[in-house]
Image (cartoon, rainbow, N blue to C red; front, side):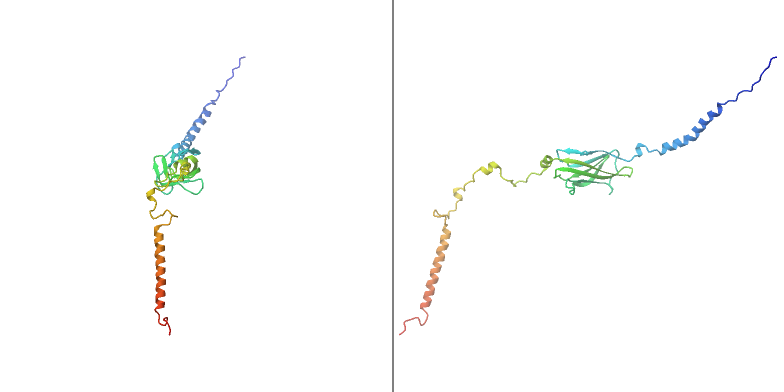
Length: 225
């Protein structure tokens, strides 16, 4: 006896799982687009300092006449929000001279002559292109040789201390025509001084004679009989 078995077709189990990835993709796509739109791009990042002259930590053999700060984007020009202050080694004297100059990505300021050897500090505050303030400090060092080389030369007519060779040279004797003709060969007494003494002596003798003459002419000083 032959038996036949009938079996029902097996259900398709792969169709349902395939629907889940597609649905997840449809739901997550808008979220991914929003995340990319909100993510900060390099163009929207805050500006940063990319270089300076003098460089941070540099030791200079010559005195600079300006400070230049370079940024990755051009900072906002003008206004009271930007400033550059250069302070000397004593921590008090400042050397920036004049207004800031904005030239594309560079911000510069002139310096008055640096007259101290040691470490100088550059403190700056600049408003970046997106309105965000950038504030930082740098430092550079100036050698004593650089300060000495930059010192102003003495003006014409000003003479410094005599050199060793000049100090050893004998003093020049006055020329013969410069010697006063009034000096005599005997002790150096001038003729003018002798003339003054003679006049005083004559005047004194005259005064004595005048007094004696008046005393003789007074009444009662004659012979009494």
